Image 1 (cartoon, rainbow, N blue to C red):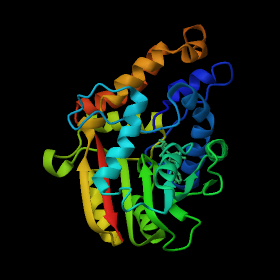
Image 2 (image 1 turned 120 degrees about the horizontal axis):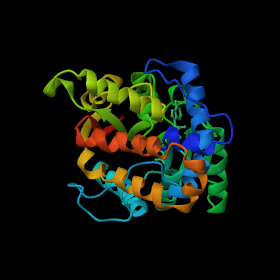
Image 3 (image 1 turned 45 degrees about the vertical axis):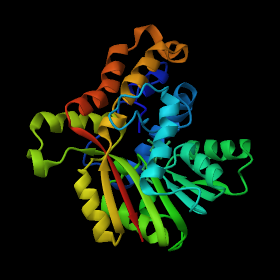
Image 4 (image 1 turned 90 degrees about the vertical axis):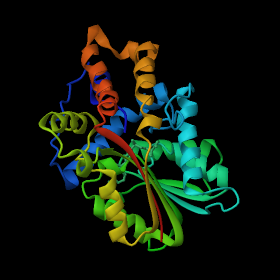
Length: 310
Ligand SMILES: C[S@@+](CC[C@H](N)C(=O)[O-])C[C@H]1O[C@@H](n2cnc3c(N)ncnc32)[C@H](O)[C@@H]1O
């Protein structure tokens, strides 16, 4: 997720500024409520400034392609499909987008594959906007969005042939339950494609340092996350849930340039400038956006992919 709390606070600068005292241990209903409010409050502004996709962009395997940010976000979807071997020759027909935002990739995938799709989000504002966008594209007969918790999906077993989840895993307070649910709703033979924020591997480079933990905690607070884990942990969890043909990949280098593009646009766009009243903490906002790019450059934040079949 991208919308930094400090920019959210800019929007609310004429009202009471809500300071989220977000603890990494926050779990359950309270966390769901915070995430819901967070996206309810920020999604409209995000869409206005950055568009319908709330995920990283892809800048080539080495992160050196010079691509316009929105195109890079679409390229990420296409590269993920390619990586997972999902093509027009074997198109998914029934997709669930877990943590769908305002339906950026849900609608893209439904259109590309001529598929039915459902999207779930914790945010009523996002679900409503996503349904509106589906109607705008004439896709309302086969694409539907609803408010639902990924940890208790309101779908019977074996419902979908593609479970797609871009950058919502980091919000999940129970990563095992999350992947168990993804597995449960997947049809036999179906595919999971998951992209999520991770921290670096501790088995290779040693335990996280106090400084790294502090850096992560700041990211958790700003972006409404309970905690993140290493990619190898996701892989182990996927295996324990029963997924087969599991593969994992680290695309940190490919996506890291995204944050500089966001920072540039945040401070060049009139829309945001207009929201910054009387010099409200512009510096803090910049620092918040910078948390992720610094996280990547330190090797602390990793962008992990998991693929598996049922
Ligand atoms: C960063 S946004 C990603 C949106 C979308 N995947 C995209 O790429 O545009 C994270 C999304 O995860 C959703 N989310 C977080 N925790 C969730 C949960 N427990 N159940 C359902 N959705 C959740 C949020 O509501 C939000 O829509």
